[in-house]
Length: 460
Image 1 (cartoon, one colour):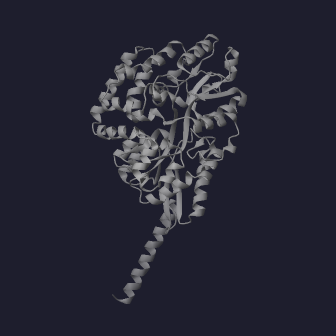
Image 2 (image 1 turned 135 degrees about the horizontal axis):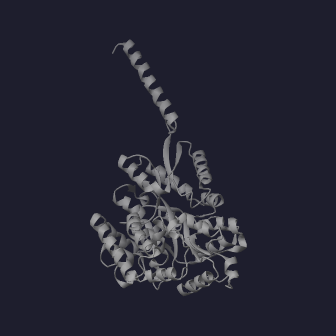
Image 3 (image 1 turned 90 degrees about the vertical axis):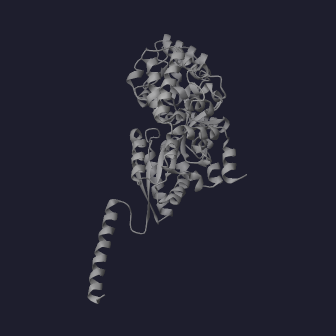
């Protein structure tokens, strides 16, 4: 090639390179030579202050890893799943994805949209965290881990208890005491329990809070979901009797069908309900509004007779690595960083919610309610939040209309309510037959202990 032609092509190449550098610099993807991790995070609504922690994590990790650029992208909880599925279809987007556990993530695992986290983490990486990650086990792999967790608690206003002659230090511990407490509060003109059911997710909560307590393990529920048992059988529908009993006792706010779930949480600090079934992450908010002496917290009342009634149900707010990420190992390392003890301490300081790493500095627990909850975390049998067993579609299209029919005054027969669930699940199975074999694998995984899962993956 002629030397003049060489110089002309060299100048053109340098111009093109300059344009590329400029475009990437302007787009926020970082400079040439850096690996950029797109961190799709969410759930500030459940842990107010999370954006402060996110900024700390980005700054801290980038300082330690100057070759990595973290691009945090906040996701809306209502569109989180659809946005991720669109990204998976396009084959680009997140390198680290916030998700809810169990079927809310596993349905995307089955679609091939996640890489197994256990391919990148060691046994010790999992052992340092709350073992509620077991809810994300499928087919001999662990697909996600809880960066932070929330236990489902009974939170109540002690002042209302005192007003009607109830012991403020003795909240209801079983279904009969909850019913008696509700009746006494209602007789005094106080709404006993706040709930909101216009959207689907707190409808699913009522199965989690009551229905799951009639099961021994998640596999009991999954047997009916895959069709080996029926939701129209007494063992699966009798929990509705407890919910109907509370409804007939006027235990709930009259506008339950007009409120979203998160709106109902404001009924407690607003003085419009004496009790709320809530997440532990909201307790600091209630204390701030009502005062430390007015807020009581307790484990959920025992509503059923299954082994699950003795479990402290904890929801893992998880992260997984998308299969389309080109930086899986780097994403796995960043996930280790944001689940470290130091990061856990910073998370609690910023959000007042419990990190997945329970080895965080407990001297940070400055309110007695949080100290009590932490004692439950470390002394009770922990189990994954049962609302997640059903998956989003079953929760939204089957459980929501069924529970709403109770609160709309349309149905109060537990057997018929069970038949409604069964009919809806049969419809779901007809539309999603490909999910049944995967669910049967999940049933087997849910029967294993966390130790057994780790032994199978990493050896004893």
